Length: 437
Image (tube, rainbow, N blue to C red; front, side):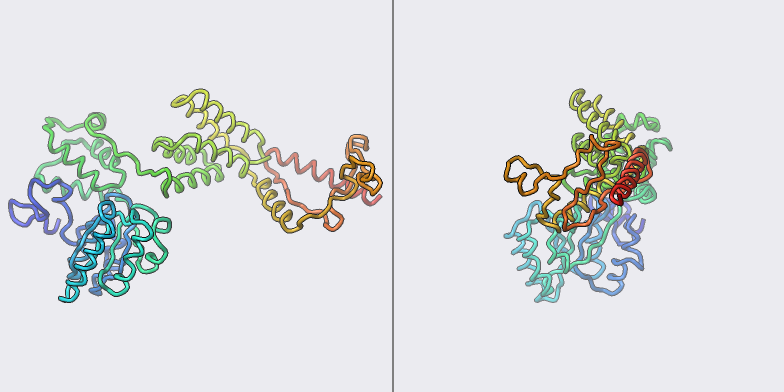
């Protein structure tokens, strides 16, 4: 790695007592791993550095992917003063001091790159306070967030900054970090090949977490290389990134729903397991399965909603972990059931037509006549009782006089709806024949 050591004894990035992740922090942008789509010559950052000037940026990506490091190296690359703050520990008073200092440095010809970590934690008013100083060039803002900027940041701030997405580190990038750690420490990690792969997988794309695990391994006297089981016993696995009220939650529930709709039980089980093992409320998953059964299966398999409601009852009766098996069963049933959104589309069309047609009176033959006066003016006149008609079907008109009959529900030829389609076709045939007579 370039510039790994400043001398034979002292790492370039701090003392030998600094954490390993800090000692391995890249010294130049070219050393950053896993973000070549941004830092390469054709990437947004590479082009900015080549031009020698930065625009305001919002880095969006998972933890441990290099947001802080890249920001610091950007300032160095274009000769700007680096001013870091954290939204967790800073308020309006701190921001005022930062802006005042930036103005003073600006008068001396020094430009300031203001790096705001966890920028999404600032409220809307605090985010607005950046705008005039970004617009007049007092600071070039570089914000870092793990949350979707579309939901967490002001539209005004988003319009003044370019959103750049950092990717979770893949296996190749994480392997590079392991190689650098071994070069720095001067000895290989005490792991066999399978354990090394398990260590990479345990990081879940987080480089900082990986290096912290590596530091733990180097701090222990391990006489023989560890296998995966021994490694697991020694180290804790990283908890998956999942916020139940934020984007990760919505991404996974969307993936679950679409996997079910695509009749892929294996993928559906994977996303359901991702949510439940990360701490999602099982009843939330069950509510989505019930919704799916009515929206995407409907009458193609009327038992789907029964299965989902039974799973809800079973989970509430058994509790966790036994109750999760009922959720799995409902998930598999829904994924493998015939699909139809005919009922869902019928609802949308019927509701829209109801709003558009207002208060049209039903035909007089199908309204009740509970009083003598109502009978006298024609309420209920000529009503045909279907059970007394031939075949239990009268073929009468049930639509308002001002409205032509509509078709809201068109069953598919899948599953039970194929039988429903036959029944509707039969009744339509009888209705046409008896209407013509």
